[in-house]
Amino acid sequence: MKKTYLLLLVLFILVFQSVNAQYQITSENLIKTVSFLSSKDLQGRLSGSEEYFVAANYMAKEFADIGLLPFSQNSYFQKLKVEYNQILPKVEFSLYKDGNFVEKYNLGKDYVFRGFSGAGDINAQVVFVGYGISIPEYDDYKNVDVKGKIVLAFKYNPSWNLDGVNWQSSLPREKARVAREHGAVGIMFISFPNDENPQQPIGSVMHGNGEQVNIPQIHIDLPVANDFFEGSDYKLKELQTKIDSEKINLSFALKTEAKIFVETDYVKEKETVNIIGIYPGTDEKLKDEFVILGAHLDHVGGQAGEIYFPGANDNASGSSAVLEVAKMFAKNKLQTKRSVMFVLFASEESGLEGAEYLASNLGIESSKVTAMLNMDCIAHGDSIQLGSGNSAPNLWQIAKKIDSENAKLTIRNTWAGGGADASPFHEKGIPTLYFVTKNSYTHLHCLTDTPETLNPILYEEITKLVYLTTFEVANGNYNREVIVK
Ligand SMILES: [Zn+2]
Picture 1 (cartoon, protein in one colour):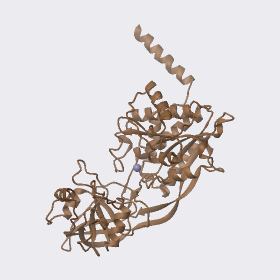
Picture 2 (tube, helix red, strand yellow):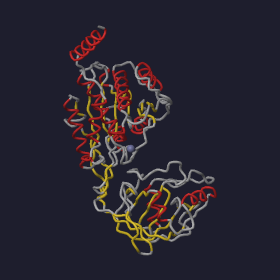
Picture 3 (cartoon, protein in one colour):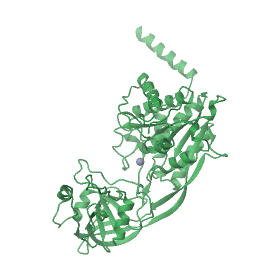
């Protein structure tokens, strides 16, 4: 008897829900878009690439289909120009000894090209150059001749300091520039062998400012680096320990050679787009004010037609969430006092260029932006983090309160100063919140950042939190605060 009642009740609820069919945020819908954006067809969504435009057009059409207004005269695209580089098919990276071939390495597993690698067809001796730094106070190149050779350097700068010395930039462009300046024809980067979990070769287009350095630049895995050290006096771990503990330069030629072949399609200024749709507010006064909800659509691309970086968590997850939140507003015909600007940014991966461009070219007074909410890497991990709360405490309180009444997914700490694509808006004095999951970076910039690794429950909950926060801010119960820098 009891069971029958229960069954009837469930049936009633189901019927009731379908009558009041409202669009809802579900992990299924979220992950469906993620699966498309992180598919092989989209080849890692390198900003400015053909595949990036497939993603951009798809999202713009979704914006149009739900009735968002285009950002400017019939277009959802805001155009900007960025540096662009494609690693073309047919690459090689091999170990040689005394002029003889020893081993060919696998792209993606043993090594990855840096996003802005130059082209080259080289076969040369390898020279270890420590941190690859060359400044008057600390010169890794002072005792070695690297002319016509390939240098091997730590990817990052020392974690220690020399009195009053500023290291050169730790970004690959600067290290490659210094190598070429000394006559090197290629550079291989390695992670720290003494790290607890040394970083694997990752896809990255973060190179820093400056001109293209047209020599091959690759990030190699540590076991591969060990191959190149064969026959030398040091093991890699001891070498790092010695350099770091004695704060010395210790560079020397190895007894091995490397062959690297790579061709590239480099374009200094290539067109790419931010994708922007507007959901207009209804209050006569407040509709001129905007809440911006954004996430970056781009990722780090693919290489040589052999591998691609799916970027499911980074940041197909945030992009799909922007669309689902937009659907919640549009499909449910919500009325909000303020307007909402839904944005998918280009070129976060090379240094927040899309977000910086929009922050400087808003088309409205920046004082009219009530708040900017950003999502980046929101679907892998175990709980929710909110960044920039120390800079915009009132905004942070709104999200925290909503979370405490709903998912209660432990929003632990926060920090100041925007973060990722929120930073350029923070710099303009706009209150920001940065949504990211905790322990999100297991597969960051790896070939394994796939939809299968996402946490659907967490992903759905954080998206609901973003939706409710966006609604609350858009509907007038928040006044823009003076941010704490
Ligand atoms: Zn990234």
